[in-house]
Length: 571
Image (cartoon, rainbow, N blue to C red; front, side, top):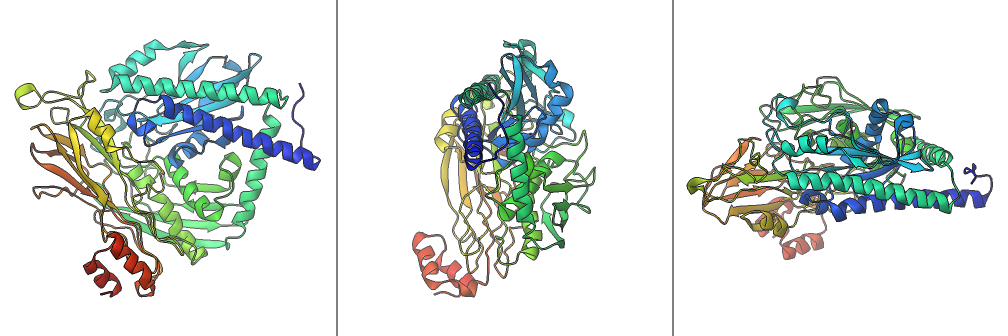
């Protein structure tokens, strides 16, 4: 077999493009394997995962279409950390490596990153990496209550999960002894192993088909082409310095994110100097996660069509002060890191709106509202009992034990020429978990899950709608919910170019008590939880909205007659 050659004819260029497309097909099948085999509902239903292929230097060559930016872009850097601990020369066929270290992985303990070598004739030729969110890693559960990483759960340094085909049962035993959901966690970890095995097998098939002994020349081509394309796109953004800031609710005090975007012909730098110090609670965004969503926001506007890989990402650079909320240092708590991290694309948009006026959407709801539910006999964080069944029995000793998760989504900001998307997870891109799934795993029932009228910010184009979700217990027992990720309750998504802000989020009991913080709350027996997700901001002067669109909104129930009169002066 002969190694691939640099293209010197049109046929060679076509050949390279076909191989590039095949790489993307390889990693997409890798990601689909996770979806088909995962145990946790947030993975198999919502797609909270990622897959990718890397060269032997740890450079991401291709990513799966299925997945989230927070996973994909953090993994782009994470594989290099694995190589520092396990050099390629030490890897053998059948080896698998794992970590959930927030600073060396994807930002919090709930995400396990798994790396495997793809071997040909006994030697590594590439690396496959994947990650997904597991439902529980012990500690305080999915809450922001912890004051350090040591309280948030079990932390696994870079370790061998499988050695030459033999699973590390000792490591697995330790992990399963530290989770409330051992069956789901074991299943999800094995799904990551399986998906990397699938990716490695498909990559070997591809190399045989194209008569390749190495993918290094192909990797160089992919990375250099993507870097050149992204730099060309960056040159279309006017050079200069652009500043913005955003206020978030925070936990015990507001969080102020300040950013300066510096644009040159070669790169775009986002500098978060002046951002609030790291919170004492677990809402901080580790630098890897900050980089991931900052880059995503930039590429959404600058060049969404350029493939996402090491080359295109290298044109963007993120700078942040150690100890800040966007660069917390060990042992800061970070469980709910997407409260801040998933707001950063809108921060990037705030800078880009000055450089590229008229091309930038209004602000979105941003951070999804994770809804971790558990029986009230569970520990203080809303997790379950250490036996894996969910927690202690409630009054009378006959309450069902459960530890489940669902998600709520707000609206996206209005786009130039188009209304925002309703009930859509931007920027994370995760899907909804069907209520039937959560109901089958617990005694909970979802009484309502519907669009929230008048929640989209008014404008010439309207912000997307949020949603209202109402949940109760079919048993006469209390249950808990962690409000760790409930933000924009005091600082709604802002409109742009004269558009109005979206509606703020809210959380309360049906009986009237409001939840105004990110603590773990108890829903008493017989009561219900009601959450209202924020709507996206509007774009442009509401007086310029087409009357036909206002009538269509009224007919669809997206706005009420009172809302139309208040926001648009429409009768």
